[in-house]
Amino acid sequence: MVVKRMQEFGETIFATMTQLALDNHAVNLGQGFPDSDGPKRMLEIAQEQIATGHNQYAPGMGVMALREAISADNNVPVDNVLVTVGASEAIAASVLGLVEPGQEVIVIEPYYDSYAAAIALAGAQRVAVPLKAVGNTWDIDVPAIRAAVTDRTAMIIINSPHNPTGAIFSEQGMRDLASLCVERDLLVLSDEVYEHLTFGDAQHREIRLLPGMAERTIKVSSAAKTFNVTGWKTGWAIATPALLDGVVKAKQFITFVGATPFQAAVAYALREEGAWVESMVAELSECRSILVAGLESAGYRVHDTKGTYYVVADVGEDAGEFCKRLPAEKGVAAIPLTAFTDHPDPWKQKVRFAFSKRPEIIREAVRRLNS
Ligand code: PMP
Ligand code: GLN
Picture (cartoon, rainbow, N blue to C red):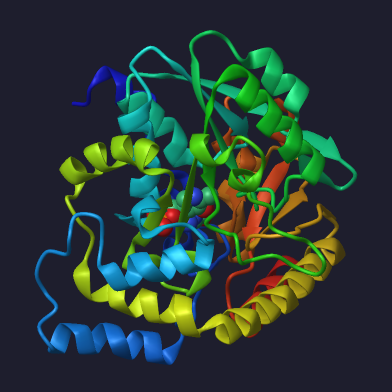
C-alpha cells in the first residue's frame, strides 16, 4: 500500500543495480560510492567522539563546530547554515518547507531521483527541462527553462557538477539562469554535492554568488562525496535566515537532528583536510582516464566528464536492456540514464559508469568490459 503521490516511484535504480551487481559478483560501477576511506584523522575523531560521550541529540541547527566550519568554507554567517542528514534531507526539507502544494518545480533532465520524490511528497508539480548537448558534454538550456516558467513556478533545482552526466554548467548559462530567477522571482535549490570533484581546468561555479541570488538560493552540499563518507549522511543547507526558516521548519520534524559524533569529525575535515581532498581528486582523475580509455576500446562513444565521479557512454542500443544484461554478461554494473528522465528519448542509449573505485578495481572493470 502506498499513497497516490508516491505511486509513480518504484525501488530506486541504485538499489536495483547494486543488488544485480551482488547477485552476479559484478564490479559495481552503478551506484556511486567510493571503496576507500576518508582522511584517517577524521575517522579517528568520530570514534573519539563516541568514546567520550558525544552521543546525545545535537542542537537543532547542528553542532556549532561544524556550522562554523561550513560557514568559513562558504564565507557566510553561521546563521545561514543548517546541518542535515545528508544532502538528501536538505533537498527534501527545502522543497517541503518552501514550495506550496500545486506549485511547480523545474528540474533539469536528466535529474537526480530524490528531487522527483521530494516534489511529489510536497504535493507540487514537477516540470522537467532537458539539458542541451554542447560539444561532447551538456549545458543548462536557459531559453527552454524560460519557456517552462509559469505563474505557478516556485523553484528551480539545479545540480552542477551534474549527476549523472558529469557536466559543469557554463558561466554564461549560470548568469542567464540567475537573471531569469531574479526577473520571475524564483527560488533556486542548488545541489552542489560534487563541488570539490572537478578535473583539469574545470571550475565549480556557485549561482548563489551571482547578483540577486544570495537571497533566493538554497545551496546544498554534503560530506559524502568530499570525504568518502557516503554512509555518514552528514550534509548541510546554506541560505539566508529568512529562507532557511522554511527548511528548518520541515527538517526539525523529519529527523529533528543528524547523528552527533560525525559532526565534529566533518568539522575537522572541512578545516584541515584540503590536501587530502586534492590527492583524492587526483586519483579520481586517474580512474576517469582509465575508465574512459577502457570504454572507448570496448567500442563505446564516451562523453566528457568535467566533474563528479561519473562518465556517460553511448552504448549504441537500449541502455535499460544493456544495463540489465551487463552484470551477468560482463561482470560489471552500470546505470541507464533513462532512470533519471521524464522524456527518455534523447538519453535512450546513454549509460552512466561510476569511477569512484580504486584504480585496480577500475582496471578490472575495463578488462571485463573488453573481454
Ligand atoms: N544529490 C546528488 C546529485 C547526489 O548524487 C547525491 C548522492 N550521492 C545526493 C544528492 C545525496 O547526498 P547524501 O548522500 O549526502 O544525502
Ligand atoms: N548519489 C549516488 C549515485 O548517484 C548514490 C545514490 C543512492 O544510492 N541513493 O549513484
